[in-house]
Image (cartoon, rainbow, N blue to C red; front, side, top):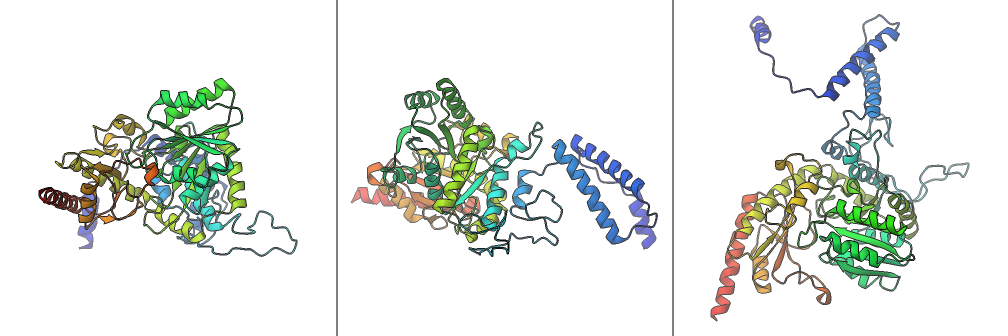
Length: 505
């Protein structure tokens, strides 16, 4: 039997090897070169021991990695980086936590204060958790790398860049901290369709602190250009606030085009105090990376997709290391984070790191399901309109195809987000649909594993209500698409029956 098995192995056709890229060919040559050099420099002719074999192999691999890092070859993909978010390494020389027997889960450091050494000099060590916490630092480091991953993969990128990132106690704390970092007086140009929490904060907490705002159609480059020129006062810090896709109408803003407009107007007027900030909560780094499109900063409510399990309250801002305003803002934002102290807790940071490790898988599934549900709803008899960038009838569909595919190259790889909204005939219709769902849960927030539905107009301040009264927002989770479609079908039929009955009474 042994002889037969051995013969079979000899006669069996070898499996076809996957195609080898130029980078893999070069790496193979480096392996042979390094290994040959190592043998020549070794005076030990005895067979290598198992321990020695591992040590020698690690040394050779380190030399290969050094070569690859210098020549920008074989850098890990975004999915691989996400899978290892927050992990230390026994091998990575650049790791901030290089250690032997490295833990394969990020440590949760709950300490608020750290012992002062005998000399009295803390050096670069930790002092107090408001200024620095190891778990928060891991999250900020991971997010900073993710936001720059598109740029780091370019052939022209000689070194891996990381965006200075700051984690806050909530998304709204991140918004307030970013505005505090700007020189007063400050004026925001915000989208006409925007998360209602932003104008609410501007109208309430910040209105008496030199922060003004004006609503602009962010899908119109000409209107943006005109509004920037009108507000180019020497003593005003102008913040162009982009939210894409917008909440709840899913409007898509051309980030690169807006940043180009800002840059041209800024150079013509000789003023640098015009910043571009993108709230990319609905399009996490697996979909869109605004810093690679020219933005000075990108903001996320980590409560949503980054955490991904409806158990985190956290916000984050990443500043571009490639723009003058991004570098300027990072220095000031760090000072605000430390002095004001609205920092993310260690536990929230740890939970967000856990969420990042499955972000690519969750978002891909949510995008696939959202597209199928949007296509279903768009053709349903009682649905007046469906808002989703993946639909060909969406006014910015072509732009979404270009901008919302951070890790996809082909048409089938494009991801348009896990958020959509649809409109029915009236507020009562919408409330009936929301009241009839069962698999889908009726709640605010978004980005979790469970699908949520919400009537937006009823949660917005009445004096600043912008959502259509018949609009329902849908945050798509990880359930089976057929279960969700069936739930919506029943809910829409029930709503139709309820409204027909009320008309007959």
